[in-house]
Length: 610
Image 1 (cartoon, rainbow, N blue to C red):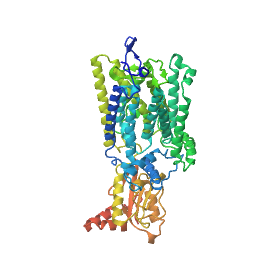
Image 2 (tube, rainbow, N blue to C red):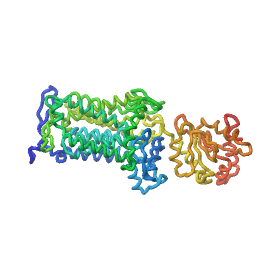
Image 3 (cartoon, one colour):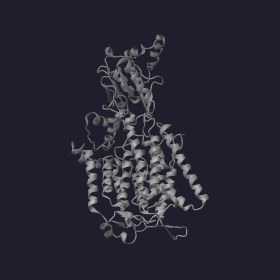
Image 4 (tube, helix red, strand yellow):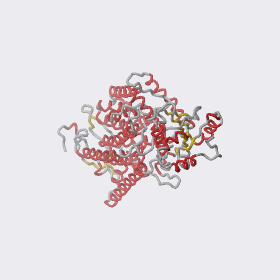
């Protein structure tokens, strides 16, 4: 079919049949992307998938206890929300994009104080960017064909993607911005439009302003681009030819866009210029941490692969995303086997004049150069992240995105290679079974075992018993006013300042003190790690003069502690006069007396009583 403008016509492309003979298949013209009906269908399907992804991620965001990192980031957001200021710390907490984007739901909800915001205000941010990542797959429709739709489905249902799309940390934003760079970069290669160059630069700036590990993605993209160029044949492989085809003005403007976006965010729109310098000085601190220095998050090289392939903890359920990994391996094989060719561009029109593509039958065209770029990028990212001793499970999102794109290519490749109807039916059955299994695991991870330490995505996470502690403190606050006056503060003491996320849950009380050791003056209500119980007893009944000693009772019911996080017990004590005030609300005096005796600690084992 001829287009109204011959310069917009897309030439036929080759695929290789089973006998390795080139077959010429004529395609209809492509007016950039927007006029191709197949691509419009892909966009529609991806949009529907994205709606489903949002619906899967958004419910019950307050259900899971806040992780330490989430609560700390929320506290950092407090300064921006209440004081309209932000100070980047080059040693901790990562970049400012998470904080800035959280302003949007806070403003929409008319939440202007730290005490106004909720878990929904915070966690809706990664939910939106997790959904946006699915939408961005549409930008690769012209290069991946139907594989982009498959990748969108896998991204929407990946257990790791779903779980960390409900986590108030930077990782999902970083994954989204990284895919944005790939999409905009590819669109620029196809169109030579300055708009795409600026958009790619903007995403690069957002990556840099999100998390320091963005530098790994930058290096992986650069290496992948160089290797793709070197693997091209003939004239395209010439360095002189490559350099001659670069519009250096566009490159310069794209870099400028990246620098401007990053600088504005780090400097709080130039009100704190030192933040720009800190954003580059930070790599000294993070290089040391990546090497495993001054951190407890050191894991073996196979840690991420184990999570994706097969993991089971203490008779818990089996977790795996092996479907994604296996299909990605097929996609990687297709990238290696794909025929290469010349991709000359009509620079007068900014459109592809010719393209050498793979074709997945009814799957649409697949650009082998794009697939190779994604393959190299993903392999490099996986190797680098696996080699770094410092590991946390959410970091795998950075290369999981690439694996998902390759998995989409893998599904289309299997469909192409399986020429017989029976084999194609088997491919469909396996694909549907894989997607269903991923959806089941995603639901189980995010809505059933969301705070279970046997869930590999749950990492150093508080248990649900933290809600028991918070509810008991609120009960006493309502009855006695504890936490609302200077003479009745709420105190928290946990070694190593590992008391988060308790400050988040106690943010409604103006008088809360958190320390890593027993305070000199113990207040009427105190929460401590069980490791500090003897120190508390010593402070109350040995260091305190006898005439000033007061009786303290256990705050929690038998066994008198709650699990703060796996391996960490939280014990609470309340002064007898506050216990009496709270207990006076009950009507059974006999029950009160019995409960009072039951809460007194035994005389041995470091009892906290006179």
